[in-house]
Image 1 (cartoon, rainbow, N blue to C red):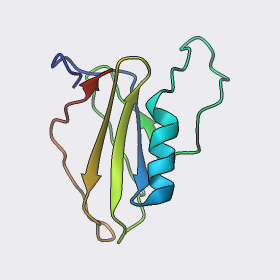
Image 2: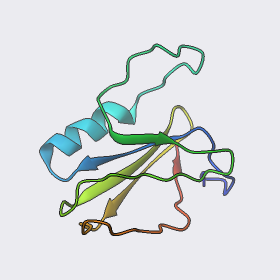
Image 3: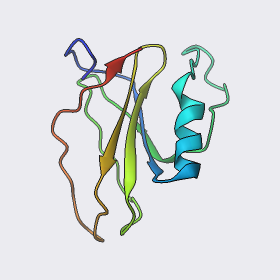
Length: 105
C-alpha cells in the first residue's frame, strides 16, 4: 500500500542483493521518474525478477535465487519507494509478506 494506505497499483517490484552493488542499484532507482507514456524509456538498472503490482497492489515474485539475503524493492515513480529486507529462502520456499507500506516521496 502507499503512504496513504491505498493500494499501490502499477508499482515496479524487484529484488536487489545485500551489499555495495545492491546499494548502488537502490541509489540509481531512488530518484528515477519514468514517464508512464514512454514505454521504451531506459530504466536505471536491470532488475531481478521484476513484476508490476495489479490494481489491488498485489504481486507475485517468483524464481528468486535460494540461499541469498535479498532486499525487496517496491518503486512507483514519483509516488513512493519501499525497501524491505528478505530472509535467505530455501529452494521451493514461499514467503507471504501480507501488507507492505511504501513511504511517500
